Image 1 (tube, rainbow, N blue to C red):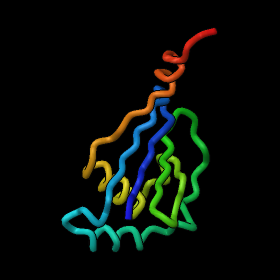
Image 2: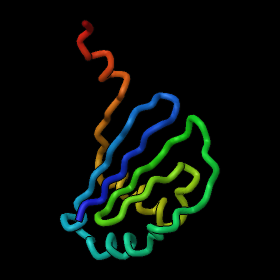
Image 3: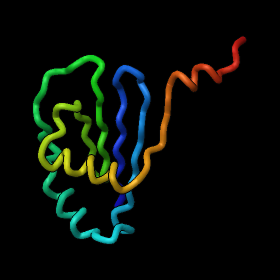
Image 4: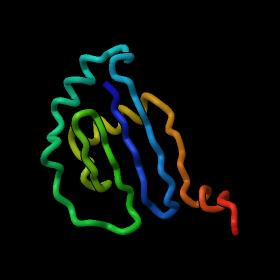
Length: 103
């Protein structure tokens, strides 16, 4: 099972992606317990905030998109654990637009 966390938004607009293969971790049972604790169908309510981070969390068959302030309880635990386990890959939309050929 893979857990993928994408963080986008903020002032710079850079997207970071972390991906962890749970079955390759030394403690996969702890990962599965944490993933089962997540209320996938009921993310915490919060009003939208400009220039804040948005997190997209995927763990098949589940997926949720949360604002930074919604990361509480098991949501935050999962995101922090993924971020501590692996380095992010970076996707800066401004870089992509600078590399596009002009006509």
